[in-house]
Length: 346
Image (cartoon, rainbow, N blue to C red):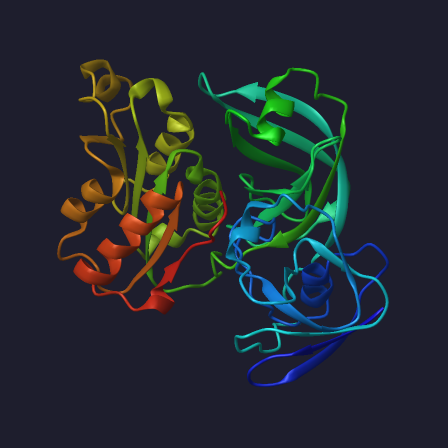
């Protein structure tokens, strides 16, 4: 099916396969269509149908609440039923053709490992190797669960033959309830990606600032691993702030400690506990990490005062934590928006 897309600055034409979401078809054709979550939550990819018909794959998608005008729909949820013409209200430019190809992928669940009482890792063996940039995510579909969910890739090796995700248990969340039911190993998982723009750039001559709340640390682990592999912290500083409620909610501390051990002079990791003081054994067990009390954006604000020069910042986590961190970076850090990277999916 042919899709005619008219944006504020130009027009695009691209082909969409039968059953392919319009957003994914456009991204595959290197049209930088507007999106954040790419899974029906944020509403960023809304468009208006001018001519033709579309089929909505998830009528209950949360992002539907952002649709106000006549004929509006979410490109990440709808497929074309024949040739169509659509409009988007934003500017759309051509994407970098050298970026990793966005396509449908599949794999098999090989392991589910508990990290905390309500957070687990999901490991998937891919049917075919996958290239991705550190910091990207996949739109993931589980058997029998409506819609897709966005999960950041934790690992960093490429081409990847396995992917690892962090999933937090959420009451009423179809995907997490499926995962935590305990019968997932051996299941086939379908995915689309890689997606996202909050990525690490090889050779970037900037200090890195990572602010993550809860499971938002997932994509940061990929960024930090890739940066360590390229010895980024031999010539640049790294400031990492990982926020959770209590020590019981922490994970990946061994891995973060190992990174600090490789670059003790320039990489610093601070664990922010919002609901308690760090117990004494924490500092004894993880002497290379720092511990502080408070919300992660406040801990980062205090620690980063006067240290924002030549910084690239990455932010991830629950929407309130992301918004609070971005305010700190803009207002107190005086960072320009192109120095702050984040993807809005939750």
